[in-house]
Structures are given as structure tokens and as C-alpha cells.
Image 1 (cartoon, rainbow, N blue to C red):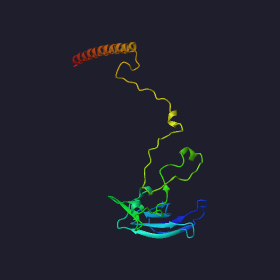
Image 2 (tube, helix red, strand yellow):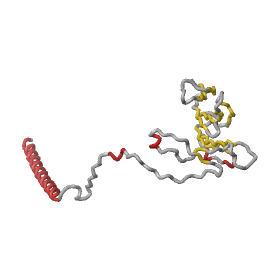
Image 3 (cartoon, rainbow, N blue to C red):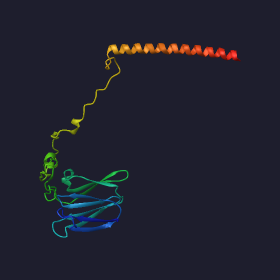
Image 4 (cartoon, rainbow, N blue to C red):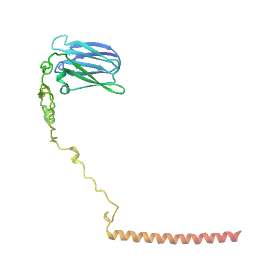
Length: 231
């Protein structure tokens, strides 16, 4: 159950993979990162101390082992920099961020080149941040290829796009909430006449309580006299 494999599947046929690579035996989860520009898939396993990478081709055997990057400390997690964030002047083809117990270590993979010029073969046009479709178009079943950008002059971030909401928010259908009542003043919904009636009723209740207290006190005195006479 702990055997790890790399499989390549045809999206139109999931009966069996078109290529299968036996990796190793481990309980660590493999984290795949794919670079469509170079057709290279990187495999990083939790708890491993290595990064293995393979080239994907359209001809059999489809998956070709390239090499392994090894380090001393095991990784707790791994992040992958998008192609737009790489330094093209240093011929970076991939950059990882390896999570240790107490730090995050950048791992840079480069292709050595003598020339300082832009390497077209390493950096074909790559998908940019601009969406090819709006969300409503995608939900309607439309499809489109990603909008590509060139990295020849480095990545230039686009301006912030204005958020447009075309569908009505379901929260707009919430029933109106009752306004909060404030008790800090006489404007709390009570009329002046009602307030005066309440004050008058409180005054009457206070008088009743005082008279009852007097009666109870008299009864206690009588009980005390009777108790002394009996003794």
C-alpha cells in the first residue's frame, strides 16, 4: 500500500494509464509540479530530501527520467514559482520553496549557458495573468486557450482589473432585518402618555409594597407579644 508510482493518463480513456513509472516505497505523499513550457514534471515527496524530474513526450514511452536533486534535510512541504517569476537573465527554469521545520529554503534550477542573451528555447511564451474567459462564459460551456505573454523583457504586471459582478447576489434576497431598538432615550417607541402610565403604575406598586411591609411588621409584633404571653 505504500508503493509510490508516477502514471500518465489519457483524458479520453481512464481504463488504464499509457505510462507507469515505479518510484519507491514510502508513506510520504508525492507533490507533482508540471511545467507545460518545458514538458517537465517535478515530483517532491513529503518527508523526502530529493526532487525527481521527468520529461513528458508525445511518443512512447512518454515518460523519461531526467535527474534527481538531493539535499540533506527532509522537506515538510514544497512551493513552486510560476514561470513569470523566474530570473531569465540567470537561465532559471524552475524555482522551489522548500519548507523546513524552522525556515523556507529557495531551490533554484538553472540551465548553464555561456551567452547572456535571452534564451528563446528555454522561455517560450507562457500563460499570463489575464483570463481568456470570464467566469460566466466558462459556466456557459465556452472554452479558450490561455493568453500568452513573452518573458523577453521580464514580467511586467498588469493593472488591477475592476471586479464586475453580473449575477445578482443571493444575499440580496435576505428578508429585511428589524431595526434595533434603542433604550437610551424616550424615542424607543414608547409615547409620552405610555411612559407616564408606567411611572404611575410603578408608584402605585411601590405604595402597595410599603403598606404590605407595615402590615407584616405589625403582624410580627403581635406574634412576638403572643409568644411572650404564652411563655
